Length: 313
Image (cartoon, rainbow, N blue to C red; front, side, top):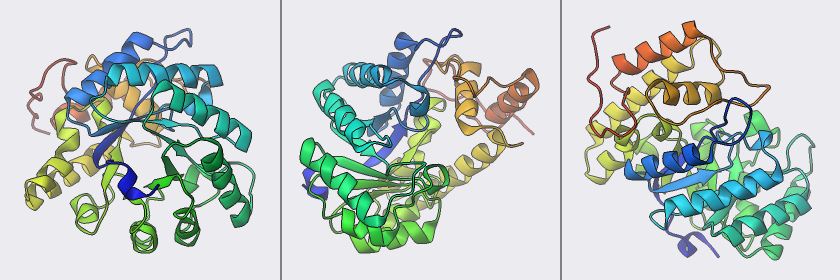
């Protein structure tokens, strides 16, 4: 397999996992959010990633979410299941379950907490590739994971049979570009949407991953849609708005995953509760987020296609 084995492109959303107050997964809410994001124009969905609080889910819950997501997507866009874990055997088992559920691929970060050598990490991915024949999306998020997938390491991993792409979430444009240089001929490279936007697409990114579609609607895919039309000025405007909105919502050191759910809940989308140790935001924080979303035109009732008009600051 290589980059040409999959047609992964465009704006992908990392889905939240909505929980009830008692901690149970809100399955109906999850399925509704998948549908809303797809109808909003995303080109693919990622389930059981960091935004989906995979670290707070049991193995059985992750497997259940794979099936729910594939069912809700109904073939409209590809589904990638996050299957990362510390033990190689656990990743293999989870990846097999994702394949059985109908996922188009799996996202695998390097083992976290422990610090394996580069050779250990390559062997980890080789073992997964050899055991489960399914396209693999590498996941580089060193701020959370501890173990970076450096461009030099990705150059090696790009030759592992089932590795076809990377979610490059180092938040370092130079690292993204170097990764693209050394491995872009063999695998697809996806940075975050707010890291360069159309500039990243112009130099060879296959698309990007974002979380805005959980609460924002069609405008969350504005960078990619503007780029396809050749409207670079429009793509830049959407990038400016995304960065401004992201800064406003995350102000004060708020946890980004909690903020996304709060933004969804405020305007009727199924964000639900986070799981401990994360806690819901207080009323003051919710009021700030509501004001920021309305001010920047991102507030939208669940089923509407027309954004709420922005108000004067």
